[in-house]
Amino acid sequence: MIIKPTALSDVVIIEPKVFGDARGFFYESFNQAKFETAIGRSVNFVQDNHSRSAKNVLRGLHYQIQQPQGKLVRVVEGEVFDVALDIRKSSATFGQWVGEFLSAENKRMMWVPEGFAHGFIVLSEVAEFLYKTTDYYAPAYERSIIWNDPAIGIQWPVNDEPILSSKDQQAHTLATAEYFV
Image 1 (tube, rainbow, N blue to C red):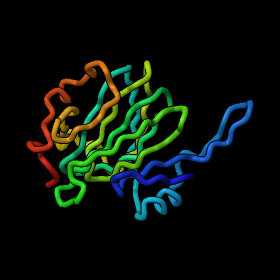
Image 2 (cartoon, rainbow, N blue to C red):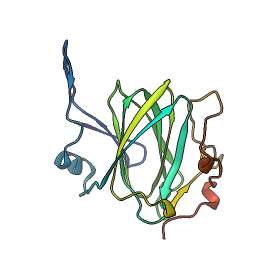
Image 3 (cartoon, helix red, strand yellow):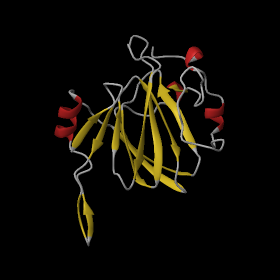
């Protein structure tokens, strides 16, 4: 596994070593010991999630104000542009974001630690998105930051208006968002 740093030091890109031939391919998609060495701390994943979304669906930017979730995300069909936004008020990088193209083809994963809002937009006709979380989904604590907040300036690679859930249409700006308790 190859670990690539991003502009936000706690967010990393993981590229697995892929072994392929005419029969197909094999790669180790997760190894607890290697992952913890790569990020420099222990992590306990408690939940795996799988979503399928159509082209131009934008999910996020989601986080939980209690039971914050670290997420190890990847795509097994299609392609997305994945974003992590630092919402740790005491962080020197508060309000900064990083984005990465994740696809079934490149097999990259992104580690989005607790204290970050997370979102993605589907670039292919459909995308299947898998992610491990460090805490359980807690709908009462879930919050969203609006995808196009000009104060953040995320450069989403889209030409059309994205398709949003009603929850994401109601999201707050970074300036008015509720943070961890």
